[in-house]
Image 1: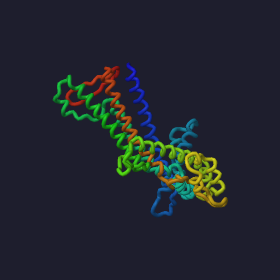
Image 2: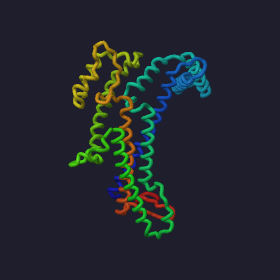
Image 3: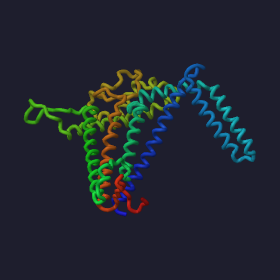
Length: 359
């Protein structure tokens, strides 16, 4: 097996692992968020019963699992253990009904904090995160398909071609796909630079100040690099602030009522904001009095942007995924040219078969 084939296999394994991880993360975010929202809702006997349902599910699972494992090594007959587990599940439902309002205030406080003053809020909330993860998963799927020659082929032309023309046509198709993917990468990245990172689309022409010219792509991308550095600062600083806020929220303290002006100013002094922003800009974030209560949520001191700010970073998933897809087609071309894969055309498909593997 050649080095390119090894690279292709390792690449595929990394993408498969990443796809599984993203899918599990998506499921975890959705299930966790829906459950937390349901737990925070009060049950009044009418209307919304989500809180009762989620408590019943938790009660049944906990009581059933604990009882099952507790009796697993006993000498009780199987029927007796089943009856005991069933009774435990029923008790779990009863406990859920009796404690239908337990933890509502804490869950509501946690939901409000996650939505308004946390890293998750910077990324657009659960919806913003899940939307981008879904897009990333789709792009990884496209890359996996391209890596194994299972991508969509339009074979109307190849049906009428002789067998010796199948390979050149396949290489040409992969080359076009690579070029289109690369061009789309640059196009989407340029669009994000202008619309999300506020790079100037036009500037004065050099030597002719009276005329307007397109801003060089390198200058637009430089704005993106600078913006990513600031966003990374906001992310890690908000994460540090969340680490301090979480114990307060879990203890029942209102997320927006525990941080005094003195604690806020001390946190700003410990942060790296002074390395990226002017002293005047940082001063605008400081609390005026030591007793002032501050919401533990950071904003960009130059623009005032905070919530949903990191969505623009997540939007880079699209050009990144297209870049990876383009590189995958380039790798397929190199594998075919070096003879490490065979392109077999039967008139209906261009199917790449890796050497050493069963077709």
